[in-house]
Image (cartoon, rainbow, N blue to C red; front, side, top):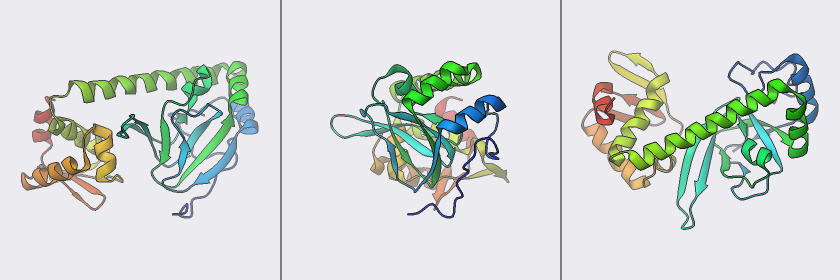
Length: 237
């Protein structure tokens, strides 16, 4: 699959995508210097950008699109740690520490990613205090997300509870209409199972149960929450 007509934004200086949540929301001087060391490119859906265990050769800034960050056990089981959104920097921990990449990054839809070589990135962080501060914020957030995965997988009482929590978090930005909430969910049953630590068959079964009990349903890529209070009760919220 191609990049679906996505236009690559070549210049960071005149970029219209950047917001306050973006890693590259920096001073004009820092942005101008970052623009000199980055290389912009478009990636199709399902492109593997970074590979767990690979030597750290640089970072990617996710400018447009979404990507999944996952790890794989020795027996081949995959766990999605989280979904990266536009504005995030990927591979930063490995670049800063010099260790191999800890996660595999795969695009979930057509994406623009800006690449920076490790040596260039380290020099850039050393020369720009605002960029270093943003890097610290991103690393702290990544650490917090990892704690969240441990709590969700390790401390939840059941797969049903984890699935209900996933649905509530996904629907948080959805539109409410007559008591129901609708939000687009561009994830397969397999990806959902990898995100909450279970099997694809279990997700299919839970979706059938939730639909039958009029809690929630998935119509194509549209997630519909029919009974938010009941889901909240499941997770103790």
